[in-house]
Amino acid sequence: MRTLWLLHEMGLDFDLRIYPFGKALRAPEYLAIHPLGRVPCLEEDGLVLFETGAITEYLVEKYPEKGLGRLPGAAERAHWLQWLHYAETVAVHGATLTQQHIVIYEDRDRSPFVMKLERRRLEKALEVLDTHLADGREYLLESGFSAIDTNVGYSVYVARHFTPLQVFPHLAAYYNRLSARPAFAKSLPETPALFRQPFYDLRDDLAS
Image (cartoon, rainbow, N blue to C red; front, side, top):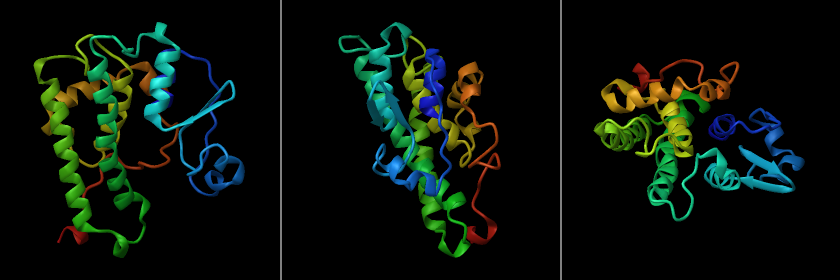
């Protein structure tokens, strides 16, 4: 979704191929593209790239006229890179919680300890963003919206399924601005393939 959102923000023409989780991602023809059988992958003019951060850097540098990167030499370059990679810091906790709450089907295989620990870690990561946005800025950089907002914004999109954003008022307002963007709406799945409910909390039988 991060890469798809960025492509829509950039207004680029592209063909989207959707692979369902499961055997399709482990087929030899797909493993030849991504050796771990994961998404996303970008194919362009014979080039194949995986890893969202790398795809983001590649796109903004290839299409600088779109204004969504901060290229080498730019005053905000270092901070742009910082937040690009911080998106993964937030995302890793969201991914663990997604696994525990959704991907693992059997309650006996879930870990209440991991759920509690990762939710707390996620909240601490979100707190950093909330503090950064507390000075009234609309986006992560003072100069305005950029590709890092799609990367971090997606991580917040996932995070809100596991911890209420209301306790982070500046971050909640930031997410509301992001989710109101037309490109964000275009990147959402037509039917919920993963998050089938708006919020996942510890189940009563796991919280004891």
